[in-house]
Image (cartoon, rainbow, N blue to C red; front, side, top):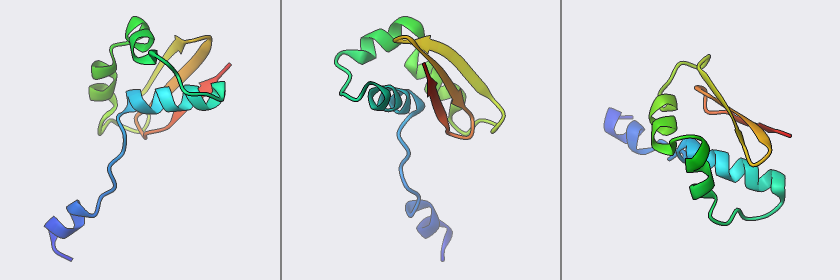
Length: 82
């Protein structure tokens, strides 16, 4: 397989900020309405995405959002706990 074929076969991964919103919505059991605004109140989504894109696996960012503790890791995992 040629290099350009391999790169085009990569699956697009949503930005970390979107995965945070999806994970919290899953915990809440519903769609989050206007959650981008609330996420902006606690963390800069663009900065979070930039920091954790192609980051070392052991890099972590932890913050509170909507009564949840969020742990976003450089390996792509987003962990939500109450």
